[in-house]
Length: 355
Image 1: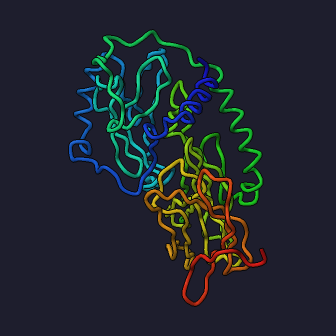
Image 2: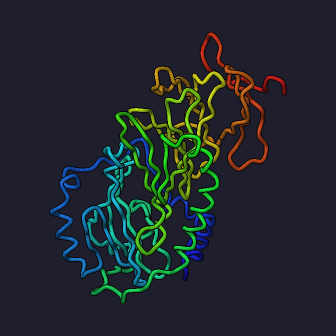
Image 3: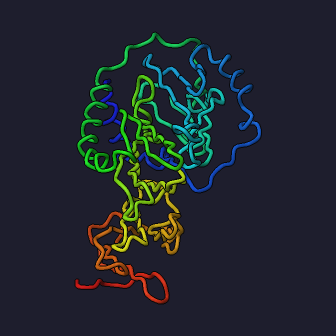
């Protein structure tokens, strides 16, 4: 199966209802890394040595054979250009050993929070599964005694990336051209100028060795521009199952928002909303105050149990009124509401000014 078919197959699988078993993304809190995992290099060396040649570690790259003979490579992100990666953008992968109950590689993934996952090994496309919720095989699935015969990389992977980069070049070219001293693009790397003329580099995770990255860790970064006050870079982060916004201040501080935010006409506030429920999030709407070049949460609508409410940004009527639409995630019916700031602070009112 070529890589284009792989991407289609993954999408169909998710649409068919596998999201609950597969979905995973950076979470605000999660399973903490144990001291054993934090100090795992020696332990990983032992399990890699016992992997019959299926797994190898080369610095920050962890490579794992797939049944097809292709090799999937997971790359740590600890250094982002001239600075250490901010917590929300850092990533590391550690091999913990073979899981014969599911049939795959047990991994510890640290992307904001830590979580143990299993990378499947079989006839289907490799995906990352939460080991706590995965269905176990009827009989143990032992580790193969030797790696499969190596396979060549499918040409369609390079074609897919070339098409994606060409589309992105068209969409972000104007934004980068307008800020030539602040942002630059080199293939899958987006470079942002921060304080002391340093650069924060955001690296796509789209190609993992010979394969497209599993959907749970696939992500790319598109430059949107600067905030109205020029104190923040604005970036669109797109994953296979989610879209988020990123604000980067001039000292390299990073804030991940629910979406690419909409700035108030006076530039003092930024509003982000959750418009779908493909990925978990603790809030459905958030308002960030931007005074002094630092973002502070001043109002939010929290996610509630069994509530599928989502929001859509419409437009600002003025610097204290933002038109929104609100409704159920799977509903075509969305009602007009207004996000309002008055002497009591921010709140939501039914209907909207001028509707």
